[in-house]
Image (cartoon, rainbow, N blue to C red; front, side, top):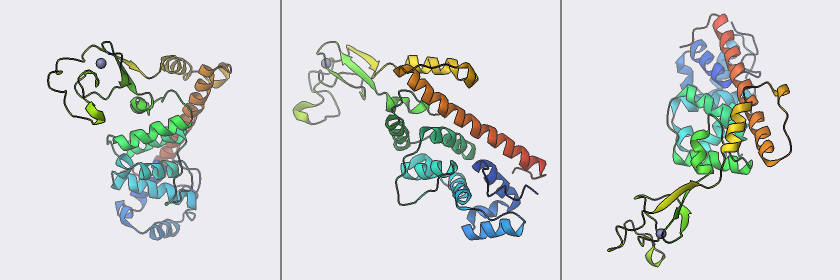
Length: 265
Ligand SMILES: [Zn+2]
């Protein structure tokens, strides 16, 4: 048996989930929450508290459905619950970016699914709220929603977001004639608008590079200043350490499961 408070302490949500899969059999995924808590008590474990009930609920949602990958509201709830926040189901509680990092790691253990645009935009908006210029692993896939690609037309001087379907300047091919978007270039303008230069909204490489160089060092070896770059790095390192702490906790908890003679199924 695991320690009595395994399901009522600071345990990683994925370790709790896989332990339940084995202890209660996979049937628990369909049980009423009360039956789950009662079932664990009958096996000698402490009563599941509110925070850990949230983690178990988020685990079940993440192995049974694709909602956390497609629906931003569901994604937000699951991520907050995975990170020990008490979730109020009818309320919007924007996620901390460090929660997103650790939470996306956990979701990927539950199922390997690509995130939908809606969720990617949500992640980028959380990063914007935190005034971040760069999203580190495992959130880098949302960078184009945070730092949007743009283009400049070298013929007419138009600068716009790079959402071009055919790689041609919107103005030069008359795509927005009379303010209405047309799906194709105007007649006679089809061969124009290709002389464009693509660029990023801003240059985040100095942040990305410095963060990459420092993240492997232990924190007592890092000295940062108060300039904009270092303020970004300090935030990223803080998030990175939190993610690492969660990963270490998961490994430790999975070892506990193994040592208790429980097979992970
Ligand atoms: Zn143009």
